[in-house]
Image 1: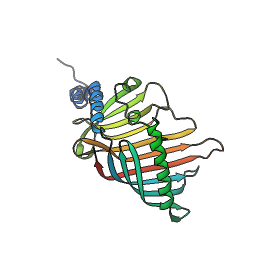
Image 2 (image 1 turned 90 degrees about the horizontal axis):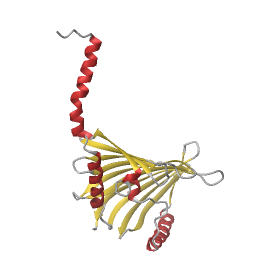
Image 3 (image 1 turned 180 degrees about the vertical axis):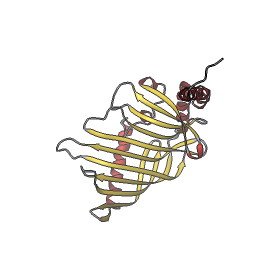
Image 4 (image 1 turned 60 degrees about the vertical axis):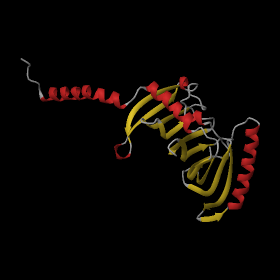
Length: 258
């Protein structure tokens, strides 16, 4: 005869039974890690396998003082074109707000953009990389050459209306400003990354804070496109000008030109 349990014993037994019963369900919800990594790599290669596109874009740059108060906000509307990896921008409108006054700086911004992208095109032609930019595979470290540098952890998640998702966390095995830690929200049915939240595993010199977020959309049922980004940076040293800003970019009317 089984002796009767106390109420505490019954609760503990019920909890243990729940964990045991849930284990098979959890293992079915979260797929094998290695399978996920391989499939994400393949999906990224296919989804971002285009070099030509055009889109409308709105960019906002908010600058802060050392106390965190807003000093200036600049909002720019533009048309962005990328041809064979070379980017060009047509500035349609640029408004700068500071000290309660809004100024139209469209002409100045358009000239600066023209000069910037001309220099970037020359740099790319000589084998260089865009200033201040990181390669996509640095912030999405799922290619075979990148995976050994990271520890990965997988967990289940829920999206809107109970949508089943998974979150893949990546942490660099060694702290390095060129290696980015991140959390990536993924559709397990397609292995599309729909959101990325990243930061350097070790901040670059003189950088106090740096992080970025990106929302990725599926276009035409096959292409992946980063439709919204947000980046925060707080950097500077002694008497060198400090940079404290939040930058957001949103893209609409995207056309993939193959």
